Amino acid sequence: MKKSLIALALVGAFAAPAFAEEAAAPAPALTGNIGVVSDYIFRGISQTQGHPALQGGFDYNHASGLYVGVWGSNVSWVQVNNYKDNSSLEADFYGGYKGSFASDFTFDVGAIKYYYPGTSLGGVTPDTMEVYGAIGWKFITLKYNHTISQYMVGWSGTNGENTRGSGYIDLSANYDLGDGWGVQAHLGHQKIKNFSDASYTDWKLGVTKDVGFGVFGLAYTDTNANTCGDSVPAYCWNNKNVAKGTALVSFAKTF
Image (cartoon, rainbow, N blue to C red; front, side, top):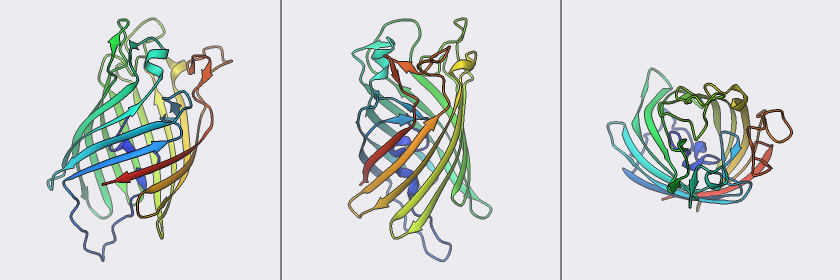
């Protein structure tokens, strides 16, 4: 699940900021990325039942600020929760427009489709469409994603209603320490419309190191989501707590 460039959810956010006194080199129009993580965490929730994931994608950025991209990762929750059979892949397709204004401010608006190949097992689909908007100031970004598809990653309401209108708000700080080191702090809240027991808050702290041939990352993420043992165990999947506090190790390379 990718937003803006979720492809490198643990480490991609630590790109070194540009300084006003330096002439910025033009970014390549087409870039690729590949990475491996000890656990694929999306908005605080494990998508791989605590197992590693191989991830990668491609992005095309036009000089005008328009961009499109595709990204993929192995997942395991789709079939476990009986949404689709023969489903172990997430493919994200996204596009938008980004730019800057005033002093040190940036913006990003776009849309993203989360697609899970496989054979549907019922009327509720995990496939999800969101629109998003973000405002950034220096190393701080505030972003909001809004679900416009009928369902938000397969959730239906308490009485079977659709969950269109669900939203995720994300406040992140990504700071370059120099010498290849970066740190990140993140706080987010996922609202599932018509099903408050599935709504929750998540947070993450992390550090990365650019070693030249790629970026290593170490992070810790946690949530207050309802899970195994709670009266409504929304995030107890296959008898596993997929919303628990987790330490993550990652490696990513952009080319």
